[in-house]
Length: 268
Image 1: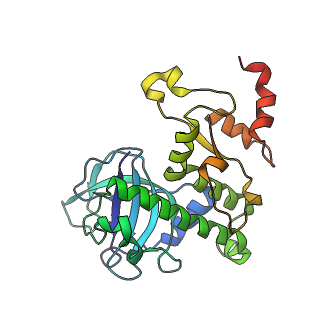
Image 2: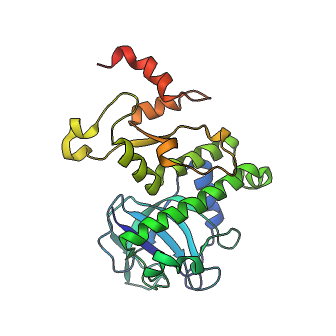
Image 3: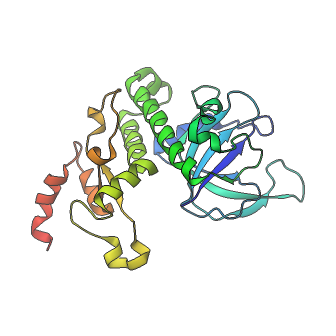
């Protein structure tokens, strides 16, 4: 999986319905759209994407997600007749409105290992260096999780955004479990094998299933406090999609040990 940086200059293109886009993501957990990726034609489904706002302040990263398409061409975003642009379909996991919320400022991205990357690019779709991508994931993870706790603990914010409590918890949980940094540490420790039933996708599907697994958050989101910091080894476990769904099947959720007892007579 490669990591790519998409760029957005509001002086060249105004995102007029960004609040509606954010509302859709926060209410349903899913928002997708097309984004220009410059001359880059190498982006593949599953690649990690970050969106940086440039042009005018505030500048910095305001969104992340994954590519769910190969690169394709379409009418140019600026409306120039007979001119095409390269696009990728972007599935967001985080989207912030820079005019109303804190974003990961450009000034922060210029420090330490992150400073090895050229962030003030006018070319959308550039590759983020692998060592920089790892540090960015750590930083973005801590930044977005702290914002999620703030949303959960400020009922006025939830009300203004028309969230329901359950939706907020579900989205926060997804951010914990889908974060590539946390996921990588969890799987390095426990392997890509289900902690409940023992299913191993590589054993059954060969190369196609290699490395495929979900990760599950052991703590109920309702019990997490604002000061909570996730430990991927202590708090996450690899589980197959079926067991993951069953762990979340009840209102209060099941523990891994509780689910193991339920399926014990069926597992050989």
